[in-house]
Length: 325
Ligand code: TXA
Ligand code: MG
Image (cartoon, rainbow, N blue to C red; front, side, top):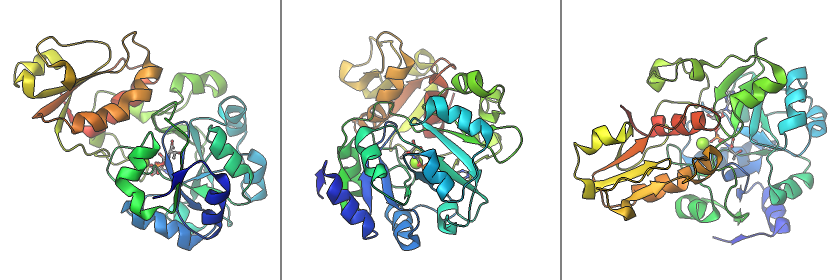
């Protein structure tokens, strides 16, 4: 599959209704012209994604969104001032210009301005937005480099725009403005604390129920199913020392914040940030989950991270990947 950093190539394929993988600061996206319903259909096919799960549209400016008939809520504009381009997605009322297939028939559309130089350059050349879910088959871990994309979806993609390793490494935070009180639908690259600093208190069912299993928290977004990431190995998330007693250390993989476990072979351990920096840990999480899944082990044990800042998004992804302790 052609992989490169040629924006002209990417534009040519997108104009033809083909799929192009794009780098963003969060994860790689599988992009198509959002105004071309046939092209968007190709995204659903390639990912084997259920049709009820809507897609985020990506562009490079708020003015383009306005030109496409979207009315931007005041609090969205305030947030965008600080965090766009960036890892934040806004759900706002859709306009007639946005095809039903993009929003899966719902009244809201998800919009984001990603912060990656190549992709911003690409978007600035387009007069249509790019519909782009994460570039992984439905139910798998999101890709944080071009190689991850090629490995799992290469055969379906006309061109992979290679923008290196994703700097944030975890998907965007999703905030909905469809009701009077803004609501967090997914924890991600911008922390809830940072959002509340700008627009005041938001509703956040996931934060308020952090200790509940995901499926006991009302599904707030059509795509936010409890089981999102399906590692091949059993993954247990919680108190590692407690679980180490039940498994053979040499047959155990570990994903930890900063701790190293003496009884477990070093090659089976993924330490995400020696100096306990949650941003660094988030950046490395998905690659570690992929690599841990390739180990010849019986189980992967993952630590619970501090429930603050990007730690919430990390815990969310681990919780969805595994069995809660
Ligand atoms: O960081 C990201 O957001 C990446 C990059 C490529 O931008 N994209 C991404 O897309 O994570 P995806 O499709 O893997 O996840 C988007 C989530 C899904 O859970 C989907 O259900 C939700 O956003 N979503 C999209 N449109 C929505 C809408 N109109 N209403 C509610 N939820 C929506
Ligand atoms: Mg995804």
